[in-house]
Image 1 (cartoon, rainbow, N blue to C red):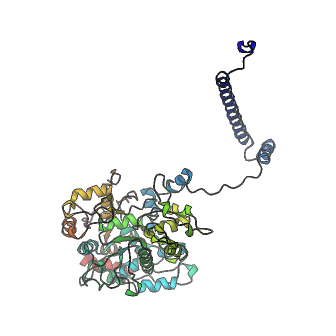
Image 2 (image 1 turned 60 degrees about the vertical axis):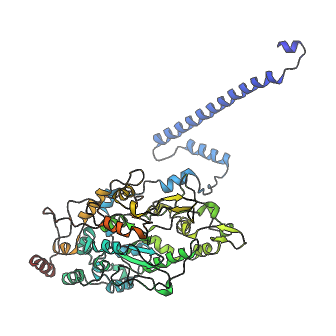
Image 3 (image 1 turned 30 degrees about the horizontal axis):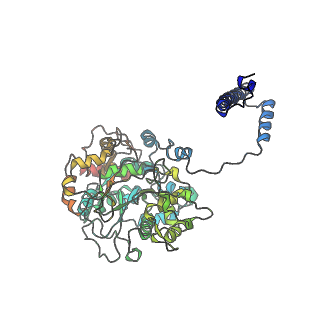
Length: 553
């Protein structure tokens, strides 16, 4: 008998509670250890039974599983969670992106047009043939060269007009050798359709190819000489147009398709959709990039074309990323529907790169676009309350999330470089940095190319690779079907290929920088290698005649 009991005293709380706490803690530990050991033994037994019994499950194992299931009741399917780390890892960090070697084995840039259009469910063989026959780039159309559509959202004048002209002119006549050779030497003719479409089109003769692919010295700008890029531009409706010598001449959207845009208004998003629709009319366009008038290219044309056409995913931030603010407060409760929820909300800048499949989705969408137009506003909403929603930062990535296509994006959207800073003196305190003339130099360019943490420093290898894998079309037509001795070098797809906010006063500095050979912003032509191995099985008289004519010239 304890002392306090013999004295007739009641135990104090301070004496009892510590003892109870110790006993409860020990009991919990024992239970946890027992449950853990039991679970471990059960797993070992199940694994052993599976090993001993082969493909068949033992009867006692089935009974055990049945009893466990019955005890717990029917297993309900878990509700989808969009904010868990597991979902983030599955969507954004899965090793889906092929390594450069895998891209080399089956580069996406060399797929036949029919295969690409069939995959997106938009193939119309007769329409495609008509579009290719009347294409403004007959050489690219005959070879079915994939193009990158550069879509410029502008206020009118293009300060870097001369830079873009020189940039495109430096790529005059160049083609991706693998794509050109696969079109020329494939067993299926270039313009032939598969048997399921029921039509056949003759392969163009070498004389027709030589005629279509001969550089036209009378061309007024570099745009007409190259086969890698298409240009689309949206100036204001009242803008008169660009000089005939400009790469932007006659590349404007029709006046009837232009809108008066306003910052923070859905009109900027609608303009993007209209440019995408216009670019989709050309079946050669396989990648779609939106840029502004203050953008400049960071690399030579061949490298930009190679990096984008080899990338199988869109470059846009359509994923939920840990630590990244999606600005969910911009979601309006009226936007929700039976199948469109706040969990679909995403954020990305308005500068992106789309694969053709995603461009089609944007062009065909009216459902989500109408919701954004009604409720995503920067100003007073339908209820008369201020709402700070920016459609151009949310619509595109949210649409892809709604379609459950996050896994087909790179989750970053770093196609264009910009740096955001804060200044109370600026009309918009949070704004992208505008580069001045004095800082537009090689050091700044290298800083942008290397990225903040230096993970893009392999850009020199990528430039060297593209210079070997792109060649003048006349060499391809007179040489062979396989370019030997070069490998694809694919940079990380979060390495920017363009940079923006180089304003009017940087025009001369940017041009001076671009023409420097060591900067390597314009395309440089390497000397033909004597070790280049050409292999081709074309035994036609037209081909032999073409080779003879090229050797004479």
